[in-house]
Image (cartoon, rainbow, N blue to C red):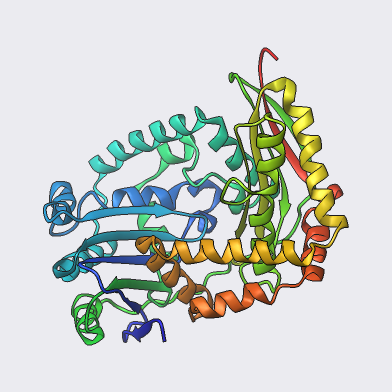
Length: 410
């Protein structure tokens, strides 16, 4: 088995993977993200993530930040639609030091009013900065097209008016309703005796009270394809097109991951990159992305180009999608696509903090973790008929939405 799991009495779970190195990596995953917010609380999960580093019952901001940085470790966090993750990389001897800090900031943060006000300004600046990056902003806005009137479509950062209105009581209410111990995973990747890791976690987390408040995460599919064009104070045109896609539990998830990688995934040899950048020279960046979520998913294609080249780029993208809908991959094409994807999965294992967070999320989502061999077997089992069916479902022209940012003076 590639990993070991231990469950504390309060239902917090520990997952451990051996790694022969002087450097270890750890994370704590909380099954709470922006989709768990009400409209008025939009941005709350991300706001809390920021404030976790500010003040606890026994540490001030400087002590929190210095706790790991003074021993050369790296501490960071992020928020997604469905998770909050805190992670650290450190020398092996600092495992307990790192896990102790996780426990302190997650379970004992005080969220003082003065720190809340300062962090509101930081996040408002972050929102403004984000809006100045059209290649980032358009992807967030496109999610609102795909998941209209649902928390999944809202920006993780929130809106200025919601962030400004947050109160301390809102923070504690959100945490109380969403931070359940049976939905918390601690991940450790390092060179330890697993019994030692268990002892440390029992010591640090064992006294935390068990809490399990049942939440109803629901997504009702009300998707209607739409084409939107917006004028922006920008020089280049930016475009996203796409569709709703499969959830993380769907049988076709792996097939769409493979198809996405072939179409516009990592590397310069994707079909979209070869046709639109290399052959036609009309876009510096073109890529496709597939993000599976617990009960739905999103597939999208993004490119940026000169305004006069936009229409041609869109036509070429539709041409590539039509090829995948109309034609089965040949034996050699399928083999090459699988080999490329498998190689990228293997290389991804070298991102050690990415690996341990991925394993922890897998335990949370599936209650198990596939080995590399099992993942490879799933990729190799994909057939050309499956890919054709997926392409005709996800790339169906009548179901594709498009959002276009155009320069105001074009």
